[in-house]
Length: 235
Image (cartoon, rainbow, N blue to C red; front, side, top):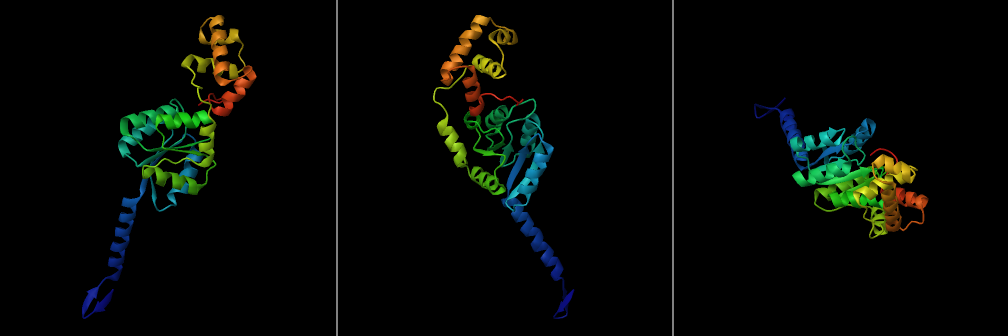
């Protein structure tokens, strides 16, 4: 404590008040972020990277889509960082529900990099799309852009969208058939799996090959995996 003109003055208290006010102002101007990622270590790594940036405030985390939607309703974050591969509910469905119910601003951070993945995510309402090998600075840039209301797509994502074949729009049944084809099922096995006639399977397979521009089932499988139309691992 110091004495000025015979009166006491606590410089420390003024400094504490200034520091508190500065912290409050920083928090007010921060981008409030909700992380929706099922892998604990990936979620912790992302939290560690983002929380070091002064403009980012992690307000919540969720290990699955349903919890993510609940957390959003409770916390109302500015931006959601979302993985597409989630248990029980796919990331695409989470995006659709958050957009429909809350007009949420969403950045996808995913290992899925097929053109169809990117297209479906953006069609569902995502405003940004990044690969999980993106740098921390890229993620920060994406959050800042989306928070401002601007879409964020890196060049690689833009190129893959540009490469997406026009006219490739499979029906739900054709998608099921294609999934079975990529797993190596014969027409008879597909018929048993889906509970339809083998003749109907042949019609669907022919339609799928035609839409993909594929010569045979092997080429259709390659195209489907490259474009993210199907995935061999559970989504």
